[in-house]
Length: 180
Image (cartoon, rainbow, N blue to C red):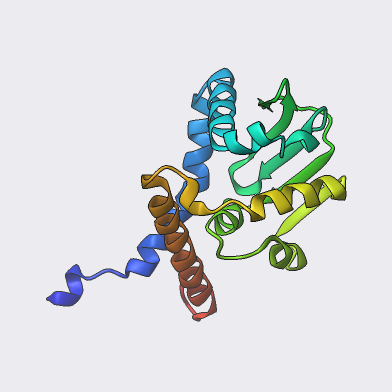
């Protein structure tokens, strides 16, 4: 009787995580571009306020860093204008493109993996001005996850853990003969 009600949490986690890119794309499609752009701009300026004040982001002046989340079909450019970060969702000429999956970006944010490891495993790609990429990497290396508002670090770590568990479950399922 107990077997009837039991389920495999790893398999359920894997299926839920597999739906995240589709859900993210749907939310992105339904949210007006202007709202997305203003929201990202506001969040980035708030988060990077100390660096903006100190001039640590001046290397982005008149340059475009494009971030692309491959599994979410999300791409946006960041530049510095009038000592404020600006986000562009429309296609712009990029000085540097950084592309990875949502899980790999999350692993970076949570400090679970460093960018060099992802780059050499071909899970993080950079195209364009490598000097600009090094400026970005060096700046981000100085920022701790704990700087985020109180609920976010715990949520990000939980999400990262769920993604990691689902990835392991997917790998195990793929190696078991006859599994779906």
